[in-house]
Image 1 (spheres, rainbow, N blue to C red):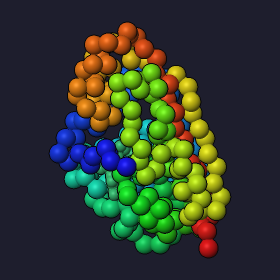
Image 2: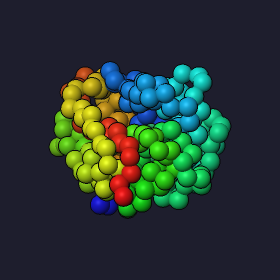
Image 3: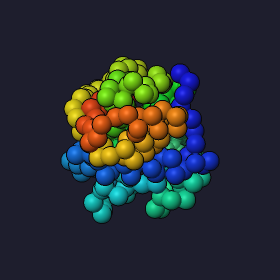
Length: 229
Ligand SMILES: C[S@@+](CC[C@H](N)C(=O)[O-])C[C@H]1O[C@@H](n2cnc3c(N)ncnc32)[C@H](O)[C@@H]1O
């Protein structure tokens, strides 16, 4: 499971580069999708675990409270308040504090994602909802000859089963579609750098891949409630 580097304090621009390319090149937004679901759920208090600099919060309409939590000081500084620095596996909140907990593209950083899932369950009120997203190992197959995403502890292939170890009602929305178009060589390079590909792979892909290129995005949003006994 090597390959996932925690560089959000040492190189926050790497994450921001990836987000900027995704925003400029995508036809769908995970954050808009999760925002709509939170509104439909009527969530008044949401905890966004691994909030980074607030992609989810900026997609939400004004009104409901979103508390951000992130392990990286650079991300906490950039997130609008309320936000706290903390660890997903030891949440600094009382039991039953939130209507919803989101963990978007972040559980793969944890060696034991179930520890964070148990914490999410603890801070959710009875009937509260977890929304956790995961990227598939087979994501972006058009770039596989240059770079493959390493296996992680929370890939979309296993994410629903891991969530089901902690929550007893689990539904999954998967995507597998050409949701992103990289317009030119710079976008190819930046997309790969943003995903922690080595610079040599990013530069080779930028030089060799004809553009524009459509990229197949594969992943899952796992929606869960109810704690297992
Ligand atoms: C790939 S970014 C995703 C950020 C955001 N949720 C999004 O979807 O754009 C992963 C985030 O999780 C944070 N993170 C990693 N491990 C963490 C942990 N154990 N506890 C809290 N945050 C963590 C990182 O600092 C980073 O901001």
